[in-house]
Image 1 (cartoon, helix red, strand yellow):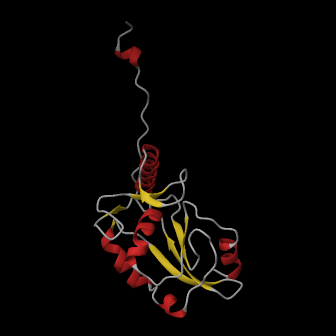
Image 2 (cartoon, helix red, strand yellow):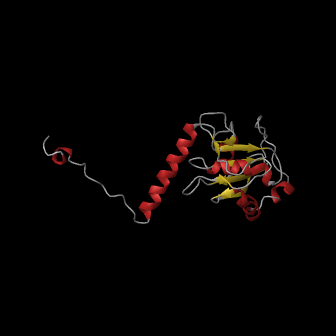
Image 3 (spheres, helix red, strand yellow):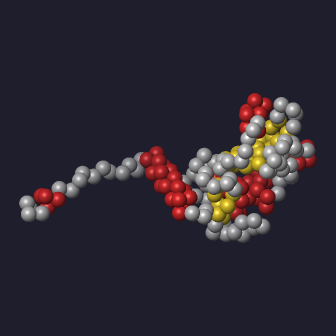
Length: 186
């Protein structure tokens, strides 16, 4: 991501179902696990931008020490026990036009089935599906409505069908039954 992309992401930005801001902090799985799990359950995944104050959206940037705490392997190892199935994400250090540095955590959407929290943590509970709603105020929270659950289940069904088609399982088309013939002209 170059400076132009960073500026486009940060200029006038507000949190959405696919974009979360975190203040300037070092890596701490307890601060990020719920957001990573929730973003994995959003259609296109999402991003967490670290170094922008949540709420005011003022740019803070990160210190060198804070930046150095974000190691992809360490982060994945810390999140893995909480995610079932796995969550794919990576982090990248980027710079804006003023020279401030940020970490962007890019979370991929789930591959086949929704991600469920596997174990309890400081801010998460085992067995809960975290999600970011398109219709409510953007927040990483447990699924709280039937429409959110329906969206998630429908997306999983589509992804599962696409995966089956890729490996050669194609649903057979069936002809409509001829009820008149079955009833013998009654």
